[in-house]
Length: 386
Ligand code: FCB
Image (cartoon, rainbow, N blue to C red):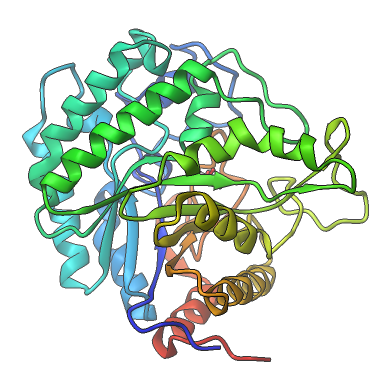
C-alpha cells in the first residue's frame, strides 16, 4: 500500500504536556488549585523536560526515519503578562524550529494547544469577547517565528476548547458536552483572523479538529447528525477555504435514539477508557473532506497503552483506513502520530500515548519498537499489504 510522494510522516506533541514548568499557564494554576476547575490526579510538574531536551527528542524521531514534527508554542511563555512579549521565549521556539529543520523534520507549528496565559484566564478566557483580540495580538507577535515554517495550526481542537472554556463543565461517561455556542463563534473568529495573519507571513494555515466518528444506530441518523453538528461539523465547515485541515481521531461514538451509547462490555478499551477502534481516523478524514474540502493532514492519532504491540496493531489499522481514503481520491497529505513522547494527559501520566518512553526521575529517553516501526513505514512510504 503505497502512499503519495511527499506524504509527511511524523509525530505530534503539545507544549504543556511535555515541556515541564509551564507555571504561567492556566493549566498549571488549575493543577495547583489557584484557578477554578476540576481537581487533577497529578500536576504536570517537570513533565518530560522537553523544554530542555527537545534536540534529543527530535533527533530520535529523525533517526527513526520520520520527516515531520508537530509541536506547539506556549502562549503563556511568550506573553506571560498581557502585552509583554518574552524575546527569550520566542528565541527558544526559533531554536526549536531550526533544530527540526537541521534534522530534516518539517515543523508543523501549533499556536494554541489548550493552555492559556493566567492573565487571559483571569479575564474570563474564551468566555469573553476580548479573547479574540488578545489571541490575535499574540499571533501577530509570533509571526517573525514563521519564517521558513510551512504548516501552521492556529488552534488545536477548537471543539474541545469550546467545551473546556467553562471550568465548571463536567464530562459525561460517553460522548462530549456540547460546545458553548458563543465560545464556538469566538474561536471561529479567532481562527479566521489567525489564518490571515499566518498567510501574510507566507505559511499555510489550518486548524485541527477532534473528530469523533459518530455512528448512528439504524433509525438514529438524525440524532447523530444533530449531535455531531455543534461538536464537530461546525468546526470542519469553518475550515472551508483554509490551506488544510487537521483530523485528530482516536475512537468512535455510537449514537442511539437517545444519544451516545455506552461502550459494549466486550469491547477492548485503551488506558483512557476509550474503545479500541483503529478505523476512526478514516471516518474523521471523510467527514473533514466532505465538509471542508481542503487537503487533510492527520495531525493526531494513537492509543494509550502499556502494550506497544497494540500500538503497532492500532497504527496498522489506522493507516489502512488512511490508505483507503487516498484510494478514494481524498487529498490526505500526512500522518502525524500522537504522540512522540509519553506525556501529561491533562491530569495524569498514566495514559501512555508515546512512541518514546522516558524515566520519571532521570528523564532518560527509551524509544519503543513502535517508533522504529513507524519510521520504517515512513522510509519506504508504504504499508505492507499483509
Ligand atoms: C487530544 C489532544 C491531545 C491529547 C490527545 C490524547 O484531544 O489534542 O492533547 O490529549 O487528545
